[in-house]
Image 1 (tube, rainbow, N blue to C red):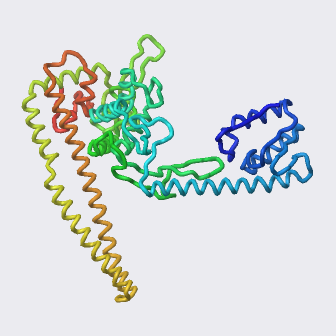
Image 2: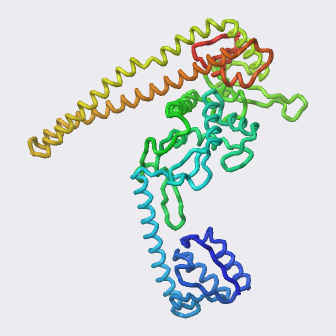
Image 3: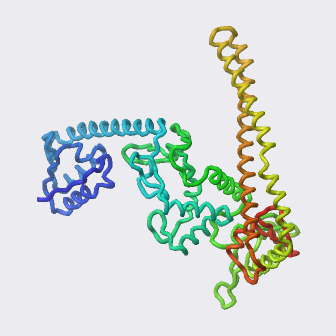
Length: 463
C-alpha cells in the first residue's frame, strides 16, 4: 500500500499534481487495483478531469472509493453521484477563485504593492510586505540604465554583464535580451507600480492574458523606494521611443547593428556574408533596400566593411578632438537651449489654468442640469463643446509633457557626450568600442563616404 499526496496544490487542474499523476500512471500500469480517496473534491475539482480519469481507471479494472461520500466507482450509481459531487466541487473552486480575485483587486485599489513570486532584481520583500532595496543588486540595475543612456543596445548591455560575471535575476550565467528590456521598462524601478497588468481568464486552467482594458488598472506613484530617479526612468523611455522611431534596432548583436543608415534612401544597413563556404568568406554591410527597386530607382549606395567604419570613426573622432574646445563651446549652447524650461513652463501653466477653467464651467453646467435649470437640449449644447475642448487641452498637456521628457533625454545625451569628450586625454590610435557606443548616434553611408553623426546631435563631421 502506498500514499500519494499533492500538498498545498490546487485540485482545479491535474497538470501540476505530480503525486496524482504518478498514482494514475501506477494504476494504469497494473500496480494498483483499488484507490481510496478522502473525498470527491480531493480527487479533482474539475468535473471533466474527474470523469475522464475515473472512466480511464475503470477501463483498466481500477476502482476508486470516495470515503466521505461513500461512493464506489464500480457501483451502478457511482458515475451519476460523482458527476454531481464534482460539479459542486468545481463551483466551490470557482467561488474561491472569485473571492481571491476580489481580494487581490481590493489590495490593488488600496495601493498595496507586491513583488512577483520569482526573482526581482534589486528588490526583496520587506517585513511589512513593501518591496525593499537590495543594495548590491540595485547597483546592477543602475548600471543597466546608465549603459542604455550611453547608447548601448539591449544585447550589448547583456553581453557586458556576462563579461563582468554578473549573474542574471534567475542566477544564470547568460542574460536574455528580453530581461534587459523588461528591467529598462519596469516602472517599479522608479518607485511606482502599475497594478493588474495581466488577468486570469480561466480559473480551471489558470490561463492569464495581458490586461488591455478587460479589468481596471491602478497606477500608484511613490508606492515603494525607487532605485532609479523618475527623471532618469522617463529619459530611458524617451530614448527607447526615439530609437524605435528612428528605425534603430534595440536587440542587435553587433556593434554596427542599428548604427548604419543609407544617405540615399534612409534605410538601415544589414550584414551579408560573401563566399560563406570558401576561404574568401567575409562579412559586408549593405543597404537593406538595395534590391527593393530596379533600374534607375535602384539604390546605388555602396556596401561597407567593419574596417571601413572603424577607420572613418578614428579619422572623424580625431578631427573632432582637434577642435575639442570649439565643439564643447557649441554643445554648451545646445545644452542651455535644451534645459531651459522657461518656455515650456509658461505654456504648461497656461494650459493648466485653461483646464481648471473648463472643469469649473463643466461642473456648473452639470449642476444646472441636475437642478432642472436648463433643458436636456440646452445642457447638451453647452456641455459637449466644453467636454471636447477639455479633452483637447488634456491631449495638449500630455504632448507637452512628452516634449519635456524628450528634451531632458536629449540634454542627457549631450551631457554624456561632453563628459566623454572632456575625459579623453589624446587622439585615438585604434578603434575603441566603448567610445563608439558613448559617442556615436549613427553613421550615414553614401557614395562619397561615411559621415559620423555624434550623440551630441548637432556636432557632425565627415571624412
